[in-house]
Length: 58
Image 1 (cartoon, helix red, strand yellow):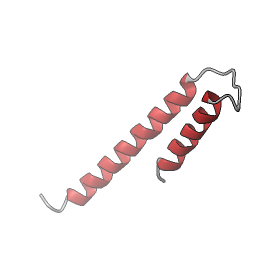
Image 2 (cartoon, helix red, strand yellow):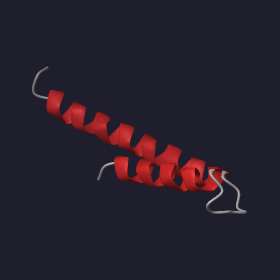
Image 3 (spheres, rainbow, N blue to C red):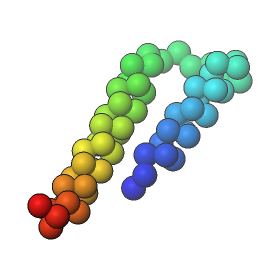
Image 4 (tube, rainbow, N blue to C red):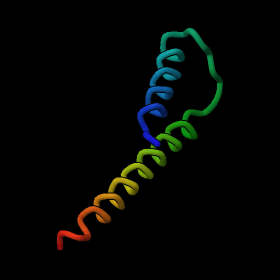
């Protein structure tokens, strides 16, 4: 699963809110925390894949 669709969705929601199309009265920290956790998970996943791929080289 790629993080790109999640990031595109996040940017789209933020864009709608910034331009006043949608007015949300919710705290933004859960959205930011979710995006950070998704990005961190993608980093760990790619690191795990790199470790698995490089295992036969050493």
